[in-house]
Length: 257
Image (tube, rainbow, N blue to C red):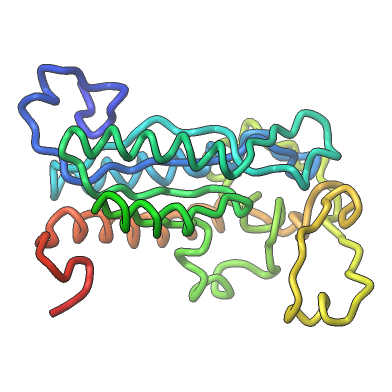
């Protein structure tokens, strides 16, 4: 059975008979995540959420298409760990811009970037695209979607490769997670008080700040926790996709009257 919401699965005949309104572009990264998670887990997470949500949204609004996942991201601060792959934000923006421009040529003027990596910063590009070309681009960092319920599911904060990311990985690709290899996720604090308090920010070189390329303890991770969080995230993102596809395209969009 063909999944018409999946651009890689459908074909020209079916596409020609559809009026797609919303495209979903998953973007990930290829980088180290502690010793126990696969190098491509950001891309796997983004692809899973995008595909699950597009499939569910299609049942209610068959005008949504899921694009192939971009597997590389901005990882210059993780290059101290073997075969983390870095793509500059400028080059990543260039690829995303070309994709969105192509979609606009085909009448798709609403794109959701389903982002799976914290180092990717798309908002400057989004502002410029909407100003220059009249398309509408929305950025969704999937891991932040359920932050208001985070403490009801997880015990520890997770910044990189900790309890939440590991739980979600256990839920979607348990065979690729080697929990016996996991490090503690401990980090070295900043030396400067302003950085510790957060009112001054800088980039973290993960090879200096961490012992195992992780910021967060994965030891309490379970597949059940990951499934609970994914259910919450995917329900919310699916609802957003349906609403976005159905929203009127008037002079105030995406603002209310």
